[in-house]
Amino acid sequence: MDALFRCLKNPGTTAVIFRRSYGELEDTDIKEAQASYPEKLATYNAGRHEFRLINGSKILFRHCENEADRFKYSGIEIQFLYFDELTSFEQVIYDFIKTRLRAKKSLGVVPIVRSASNPGNIGHGWVKKMFVDAGPYMEIQEQEIYSETLHKTRKIRTQYIPALATENPFITDDYIFELEQKPPALRAALLTGCWDSFEGQVFSEWRDAREHYDDRLWTHVINPFPIPTNWPRYFGFDHGYSRPFSCGWYAMSPDGCLYRYREWYGCKPRQANVGLELTPVQIADGILEREAPEIEDNIKVLRVADPAIFDKSRGDSVADQMAPGFMGRHKGVLFNRGDHARIPGKMQIHERLRFDEKGRPKLQVFNTCKEFLRTFPTLPYSTKKPEDVDSDAEDH
Image (cartoon, rainbow, N blue to C red; front, side, top):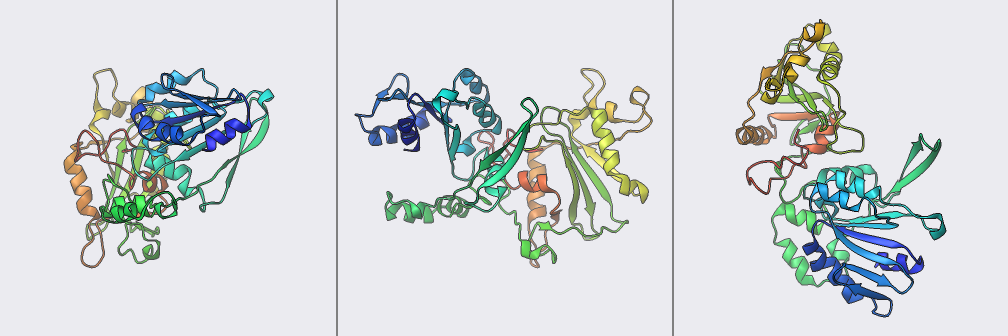
């Protein structure tokens, strides 16, 4: 109803409601609009999937099933933009559609974006970061941005408003009883609005217990501690250019626990799954810069990388370009070829995440590794390979 109220208040404006597919629109948003919009105020055109209002405003229902579909809307002007089930969209779609948000001065309106969503799905990670983790719920978060073109600053505002099923006056108790019978993750997501677990979460055993950051029991996230210099060190690398690259430094304790103590994630700020576009040489220099403490203490780091970086089919491989001697460079980094069998690797992670009877896992992460903590717990299963991680998510 928000779209209807805004369009009635502002003649000649356009509101667009997006969902992933037209089928979802017809089953929910369009159906609800037809039942609630007064016929004297709005006329529905089924062929065009839109309502025409008596004051010249329009409410359009549109879909964006694939990333490429976003370009269908390159010429549209939107004053009021709505996303239903936002987590079903990749951030690249959200960001592009928002570029269509503008208003002529004569309309006298400030364009807005409103979204609704349950936890889960492919966009869970970026939506959680942008809205849920931005600050206390209900509190308006402000960010000052600067326009290099206009030489002006402006504040943009976001707000996360949680809404529970128990707060919906239009549903019966039957729905609540039904939700309570669901598996724990699905129940927590749909009944209590929990964003820390969701149906389809790959590593559902993941625990982030702040009260145990110091004693390191029953948690996978811990406070940093001085790592003994005699602990073996490892480095994992997943290359990316337009997509993020991922660098992770690990230490192995004598009892076999692996600690992720440092990271470098090549992702543009506020743009999930968008790479920094650094060359292999630039990444190699960045790795060496971050390994200065190990170099100073003469600590050897065993580096392992995805076998894809050794591909020479198109010339010098990524590994070649990162190695000493490339184009006359004296410095560089060398890698061992990793095993990229996804399912066995995934099962090893499950085993390492498992707590023993004393509450100790075999994998723990320093709470300074922010990008790992953002992406790893929210990895969803693939819809095509049930035992595998969805490779379209940030699985770097």
